[in-house]
Amino acid sequence: MKQIRITSSKFVRVKCPKCENEQVIFGKATTTVKCLKCGYVLVKPSSGKAKIKSKVLEVLK
Ligand SMILES: [Zn+2]
Image (cartoon, rainbow, N blue to C red; front, side, top):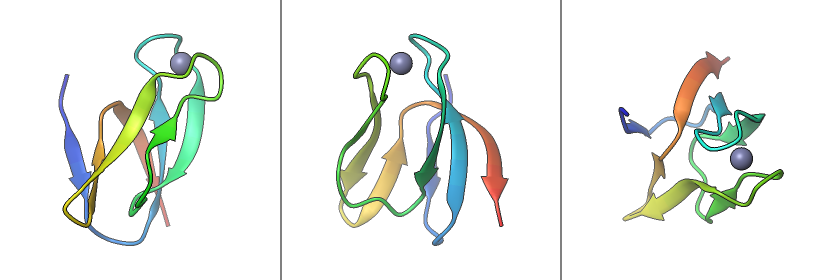
């Protein structure tokens, strides 16, 4: 699985690798974002940048 670092202030649509739930998250999230369905950690903040630990389906403008 590819890990993508989103540095710009954009919303991204991600898919949970565990339960395939789709969720829209803020690309510059500074807090841990968990899947609403199963609790899998989708985004982990790391040194000011959000590290997306799930599949990015789309970057929303
Ligand atoms: Zn999930």
